[in-house]
Every structure is written in structure tokens, then in C-alpha cells.
Amino acid sequence: MTPIPRQDGTPVVGLRAAALSYGDREVWSGLDLDVRPGEFLAVLGPNGAGKSSFVRTLLGRQPLSAGTLTVLGRPARQAARHIGYVPQQAALSAQAMLRARDLVRFGIDGHRFGPRLRTGPVRRRVDEILESVGASAYADVPLGMLSGGERQRVRIGQALAADPRLLLCDEPLLSLDLNHQRAVTELIDARRRSRGTAVVFVTHEINPVLGLVDRVLYLARGGHRIGTPDEVLTSESLSLLYGTQVDVVRVRGRVVVAGAPDETAVPPHHPERLQETDGVRP
Image (cartoon, rainbow, N blue to C red):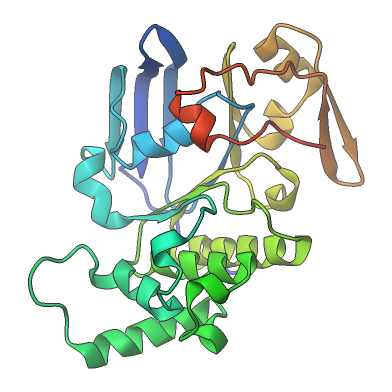
């Protein structure tokens, strides 16, 4: 494999004593974390643990309740041009008639005010991106006519269009079959290896990316754990985190977590009810 370019100095993401609360409910606190160029960080945890909120914080859309956050050495909102974002699969509605190439173009100049960039160079760039994510065959097909896996390829193309230094992926494998899961994870891994892009990958299922992950951030109501998969995904580590017995079993290279408490009791109006999905599944 091509080595991942590493850079000394400023981390891509820096969190110090970071905390997030909604009213009197503390979601997570005391979070110290640096994410380095080219690092693949998987974010795991049960429903309501604050995984999607963590992504919104890095995007500058959700302020911390305490502590500090920097992205590329500056406030998150000021670094937005250098962040690529692959959201959860969602209902298409207004986007249904957009073509694949239209969505990718938004990643190039959708942030601009006034006249758009010249069509020729932008079209060539869009074509290059679609080819790089294997979506050239359906470049002019409306998004509403694409399969879930095809749409995710296009969304990754959109996220990569601005040449990001940080790629945030919020449950990008939901509703995808194994072949599409593999294709999506390979695209993301190829980007971070070729360009040193840091990846923060929220997932309810660690196994599709287990071989790619450098470190895990595991969020739960009892706190959090940060470390390599071998350090975090153990019976001892998760039992301490949850305050009850949790069994972690490895079967043919797959991780199975059993006995983690059900933490889905989140008020219906709470943001995590709308955007979180599930804990680590067998």
C-alpha cells in the first residue's frame, strides 16, 4: 500500500477538556483528543451517546459547552473550506432530480456567491472526481434513480471535490450491502492514504472498517475511551466504561460486543433521537 503522508506540527483536530450538553443532560465531557493527518478515527457508541453531535461540533454547527476545539489550528467554522462531509443517508425530496454531476459541482463552487466558475474547467474537474469514485457511468442520472451505494459514491465525490484535509463521515455505510460497504470504505481509505486526509468515521458497525482504523473513540453515558481497537474493544475496557459486565468476543477477525446496556432512552425532541442510529452490533 502507498504510505500515508504524515505531517509534523498542528493536528487536524484538537480537543481539550471538551464537553457537550443539551440543557441539564451532559452528552460527553473531559474529551482530550488530537487527530493527525492521515489518521483514521472510528467513532463508536450506543444511541444517544453523542456520535453525530461530535461530527456537528467538528463542522462548527454545534458549540461546545466547555473546553476548546481547533480544526487545522483555528475555530471549526473558519476551517469549513478544508472539511469534507459525508452525511447519513437521508430522504432525497428536493434533491431527487439533481444529477450526480450537479451534486459534485456543489462541492466545488456551491459555497460561492456571485458568478459561478467557468463551466469548462469545472466540468472537467467534476468528470475527474466522478471517475475517481467510480460514478462516471451515472454522472447524468438523477439522484432519485440511483441505488443507495451509488448515491454514497456521489456523496463521497462531493465531499472530496474541495480537496479536504479532514473528511467527516456520519454513518456512511447505513443501508448498504456488503459489496457497497467495501467499495465505500475503500474509496475513503484510498483518499487518506494518497493525500494524508484525516478521517473521522462514525459507525454503528466496526467490522467493515476494522482493518483500516488507527484509533477508536468510544462514547457512552459513563464516559469515553480512546485508543487502538485492541485497546478499546475489550471486555475489560467496555465493562469499565459502562459500569457493568460487557463481553467482547473476536470471531474470525470480527468483533462482537454483547451485554452493553440499552441506552436508547432519549427524549423524542432530542437531536440525537433524529440522527443517531445504534450501538456496536454483532
